[in-house]
Image (cartoon, rainbow, N blue to C red; front, top):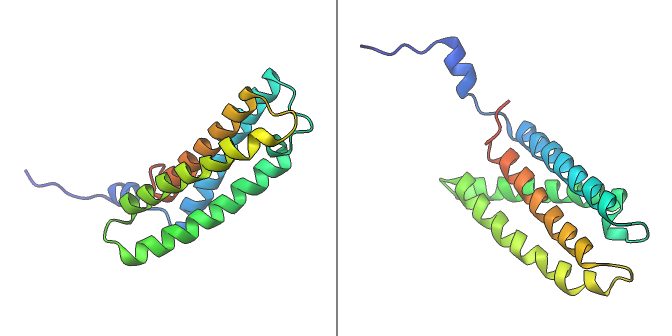
Amino acid sequence: MQSVATPVDSIQQTRASLPERAAIGLVLALVLNALVRAITGALVDVSGVDPLGWGPILTVTIVAAVGATAVYVAVSRFSTRPDRHFTIVAAVVLVLSMGPVFTVAPTIPGVTATMLVALAVLHVTTAVGLVTGLTGVIHR
């Protein structure tokens, strides 16, 4: 039996454009980070701890999204498997980004172990959201 492609099949297989995927990744990362921040705020008092403020979380997530998108573009130009190679680069960057969480953040007055865990989780949720969006795991 011969398979016939329908217009619906073509639409479902169409990959979103890079700006759309970047936007999806940013929104996903922001939602995940908002959940982590809300849960952390319900567990411990985060007032006075700048890295867990809404403004820094929003700003850093947006900067990460712009940077991740630029890296994805660069990887796409040099790779025949950009999604795979971008994911590897993102994993390396995630590991490196944990350095300040465990070296600098503990020196901030008022930071507790729970807050350090929350900061680490915020790094992970940002990475997961951006990689998921940019690689097209979530389709439009």
